[in-house]
Amino acid sequence: MLNTRLQTDRRTRPVHRRTLKLLLRIWASEHTGVLNTQDGSARFQDGEPCTSEDLRLAVRALDNVDAPEPRFARVRSTGKPPVPVMAHTLWKAGLRLVDRSSLPQSGRLVPTPAERRLAAFPISCRTRAFLDESTELGELIRMSRPDRQAIQQELHVLVTIGVYRLAKAPAAAPPDPKARERLEKETGRLRGADCWTVLGTRDETQLARAADRLERRYTKLLKDTDPRVRTLARQLLDQVRRGMMEARTGRPPRRTPLDQHTAFDVGHRELQAGNYSNAVKAFAMVKQAQPFNGRVLAWLGYALMHDPTFPEAKRRNRGRRFLEEAESMGNHRGDADLLLARLDIADGDLLRARTRLDRAAIRHPSNAKVDALLGRLRKDIKS
Image (cartoon, rainbow, N blue to C red; front, side):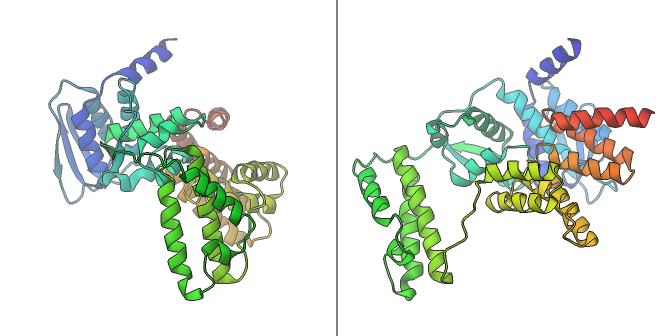
């Protein structure tokens, strides 16, 4: 009970906002230097603290809201390798702040220079997908999906720590009452049509211009206030892109036989059954749809390392490269650390595996598999 109370108190404690902005700027710009705080000097190399003591001083500066703002002095080198923990530290500070406020219902997300390091934060693939499609908070409010609140909280953290800033949303255009009717007719007319009919021309020299005109039109309709209009526009936009691909190559693009969520589940089942080649195919299918999903990339790398159809040296090198790339993405939910730890254990490097799992347990506390493997590993090390 005491531990739970301490964690809750820490989660709701205030944060020194100016220190948070300063640390974000140091990390995002990958600065090297010394952060002079009330409690001491913390060294940073390429935006990351050099030692656990430097991290402790930075966290104390975040916690001490009554202290003066720390000062940062840039130097050429500290002579120490960095410890990559600042993204997690900033994220935890942001979570403590959003517990005390709420995200506005409208506005536009404008990226700051820190946005270039977005992949390092532990945001879900659904939030990443939303940011890829829209920057309007109004779009999120109109969503009926059950994970809307989770996406909203992660966006709130990104705004709070300064990865995005909020700007006034442009006035929404009044809905066109005839837009849905026109799109319904277009959808019916183009259902099953060949690529030339979809693009509206048989002149090969005009294909690119026709496709660009249609893409601009349907992309604009994706922001319509009518959800049915957005759904139809998305379907027609996909049909235009497929039609353009077919017109260029002379054959229709290959359709994915499974949707990405089903394929991910199939990959896990095949992996558990020892059918590594089938698992690689399933995870590769999902990766094609979600190329920046660290969790998918991690499982693809792990399956590839065990696929006997590849030469051993090639599959080990490529599989580990995928796993390490997934680990650097930050949105793998602890799976990359878990799978790399399994490989470390197989190689007999138990201490390295424990280090990975200790870090994963802090960054991804909801991953039960990480906790289970860490518990077993601690027993093995003690014995």
